Length: 330
Image 1 (cartoon, rainbow, N blue to C red):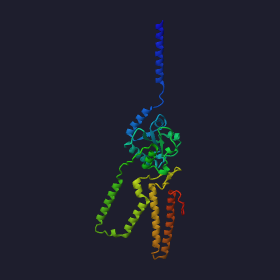
Image 2 (image 1 turned 30 degrees about the vertical axis):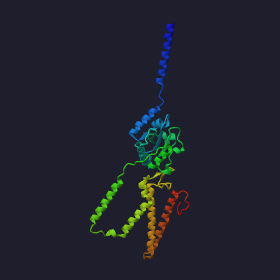
Image 3 (image 1 turned 180 degrees about the vertical axis):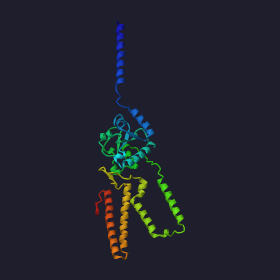
């Protein structure tokens, strides 16, 4: 009798263990473990320094826990139909930062760079309550993003150096930016030298134009325009062509005195050129002999100087916050 009872008890224990095991196997998997997430991210990062997420991947690797790594995410809209004129340039700058980090000595599995395109993850934009692009956000390893975890591109722009500085402030990782070599300047210089050399060779028997004061004066003035408008700053810092304004439009003038845009350089160059042209007309109006011609030149020169200097002062006032003076335009 005792043997039968022990046999039944053992059978019940085995049955209970089998039921528990079957229930554990049948329980649906809620998500990847931390080690699986990190391993998958490292493997994806080995193929592409800048990860590309859709809605499900964003929730799995960025929003859901557990997570012991930080994510720098760019939310953008690259499709031409979205008419985001600066998104492509912002993507290029972000990719430069991601590549610089991936192949640097500070690379680790504690920080990853990713992007979400609106057409591939519109639910992410709804989740984060975003209606503009591009947006750069930091998702910390612990906790939710705060206000400072969103990069203020309206103030600092979205150049690679600005993004690297933002990353250093949020995760204490200093990324040295390595831009891919650009040989367009070298090719342009070689082409220019070849053209000038060919022209001088063809005109070798008639080089009197080299003694033309107006020619050298025009070259000198153009060089001055290029330098005072910020062409050298553009060459060193590589700013974006334009960027997005706070109201969602396109800004052609940088809102800070610490930065500038490429288009802004040409605007300032044009304004300075018009002011110089006006001054030349004013000077020439006093040396010509025709009375009516002098009057017209003086009036045109005065209008050019007044109007375009007012525009130039307005640009300076918009960049130097708190500057009190203006003329015709604010």
